[in-house]
Each structure stands twice: as structure tokens, then as C-alpha cells.
Image (cartoon, rainbow, N blue to C red):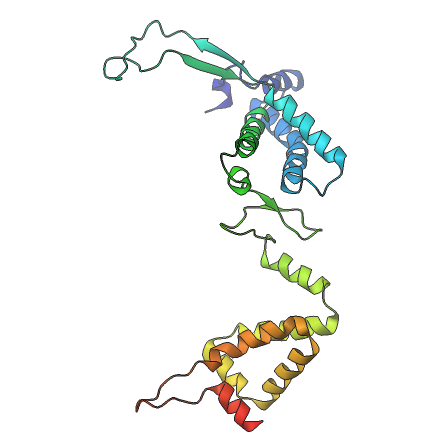
Length: 248
């Protein structure tokens, strides 16, 4: 709907700003949308991690919620020109029409978030169904994301996940981690071929012994090659892992 068709009683702050500044309604709307971005970020940040951030952030989020939730006016519009009919066949199956007005463009969104918070507090739904948003756990990121179904998603991207792991590792451990990552990312046939090389097997043993946190990754790389297949005459074929063992 074009802004010129929006009634003056709806989002009064947009109309007031447009009249005072001489801007169009679309420009006035963009002004307030930009203005409320910081408020919504504070609100969502607090909801994602309510016990991590300072009390000032919680107080600011609560004030914003209170301001928006109370910014609602509604009235019952007359339906005298329409007959009431419970079935809806010969009239409207309603007693009245509810007209809702807001001054703040942030109010409908904040009111929805508040309603979801109440659903959670009333035990209607679990937390991540009521508020399906979380914050990337990499401290320098700050992006919001949708949690995965059944389990929480910790990072917004593979890059953030890799950066966190990199920060937790020494340069030498990170170098070996990336070598394992490149090795396991290849096609299964290529991985099996590489695992037949003595130098590759030797480095895997060194990484497994030197970096306990990477031992599981080494085992996962070896796992596909431990699966035995059968030859055309029904005998079990020797896997590349078995071949490597026999040579060592």
C-alpha cells in the first residue's frame, strides 16, 4: 500500500516527521526505521543471552518494550450496515471490527516479540519456538541467526566457526587442523588413495599423538577406509587402512 493511502491515525510519528521536515512519507519511514535499529538490536541481544550482558542493557530493553507495548489504541467499529449471521452465508459472522492504531512504527514488531515472551512464560511453547533467534557465539561477530531445529546452532557461518577454532589453537595445531580438513574434504576415492601413502599415514599418527583434540578428526578420516567391500568372487577385499597397517 502506498504511504499516501495510509490513514493519518496510523504511525503518527511518520506523518509528523514528514510534515516537520518536508520529506516524503517514505523518507520519514526510513528515518524512524534507522532510528529504532539500535533499540531492536539491544532487545534481541538481551533476549538471546539474558544472563551475560550488563543490567543496563536489560533495563534499556525493558523500557523499549514498555514504550512500544503501551503504544496501541484500538476502537470497535460499528457494523450496523451489515447483518450478523453465525454461518457467514447471509452476513458477517462477527459482532464488531477492531481498529488498531499505533504512533510508533516499532510498536507492532515489539508487541509481537512481547507476546512471544508471554507464550514462553505461560509454558505454551519452549524458548526457541517462542523466540527463534540466537546470537553468533563468536564475540567479534554480533550477527543474529535462526537456531537449528532440535539443537542450537552456535555460529552464523563456517567462517565464524573456523575463526573461533583458530583462536583456540596454536599456529602449529591450526596448521595440522587445516591439513586434516583439506584431506577429509576430498572425494572418498581420493582420500583412500592418499591414505595408502606412507607419508600421509605417518603424519596422521603424529597429529593423533601430538594433538589430543584432533584425534577424533583423524579417526573420522580413517573410518571410510576401514569399510570392507567384497570382490567379484565373494572374498573380502583388503581395505587401504589394512594395507597401511601391514606395511608399517
